[in-house]
Length: 189
Image (cartoon, rainbow, N blue to C red; front, side, top):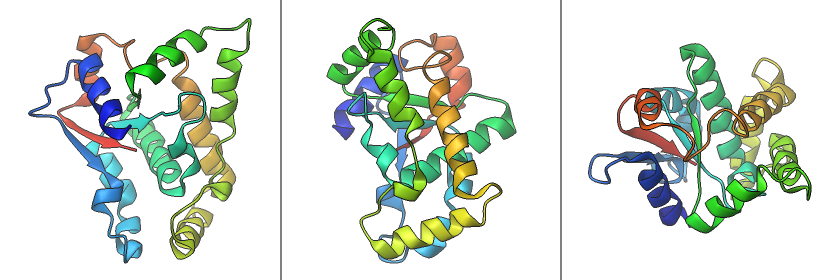
């Protein structure tokens, strides 16, 4: 799913496979000692500059239930605010992309509402980690943020809801995409 979602992202954005790089936190953060790397997460997200959220399944993306991913989305929103840019795209395998495109404009049968509800349901306090100690470290770091967990949740929910009408994979022209990406580095969640 990760590979097909990233491949679809590259195709829809016209990004060359040979020169596009994805920073994937699961492969970068030391899983045996997350503390020092967790402290640098915001700086890493800001440096990369563009986030691709693997939104699968399209109506309840798995990364929205992972504490690391929710925190990365928070830093994505802060970076966007700081730089005055949009820096989040949804990446999904072709089958999810097709369903998402059909459902996000389905006002009659509730398809759009289901997607919006999954975005509104993000709650870092209920997001999971593979390791309870990691989860506790993330929650402790979140408690120190301005606004705490609720502030983080609100920021992430707003970032995700913006995707419903402002910018989504396949809806941005090549010129705007090139300007938004600022190079070939992306964070993939």
